[in-house]
Length: 247
Image: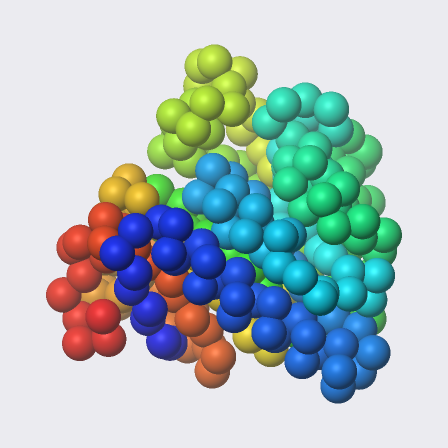
């Protein structure tokens, strides 16, 4: 894993977007298309804004997959990740080939539908974040490192649900769904490259566990250290507790 640290979130977002754009261009040049995975959440906003403003990216040749979605939440709900991706990435770029998780249909069928699509060809680059509890997508600790299913149904822990309230997506923890559909750990690791965009002081403890502790299901994002081409983008605040030599 490569760890890149920047003085602030703005610099982090710009550099991560430049790296992402280069990887998308390379994939299009190599095979005529780029298949990507996109994360959501407040920590991704500046990165996605910088990426969508990047000139000379042919978004008509980009296919996007969705990391996770709440079960039972309407697509037009302010906290829906489908709505987030439409507002922050799909509409600004004019991207047309997108595979979104339908959290309003039968969850097993939804997993199977998007799972078939993602299994059809390799993913070129995955954009991910790390949750305050160390989760990767909605794989809360202890995460399932073994399942080979591309997507699975999970129950969200209280720390994860509190984060959603803290970010302003819900008024109270009682409003946050307790189940979700998430891309599995093994599916994320199948991506040719992974860019983890992790700004802000509230992520510092999770970053510390990711880099300084054992690779463990109790620190789900630590599994990124086993991937051959992962870059972790940090700012001064999110990197504040890191002690490893990889900083």
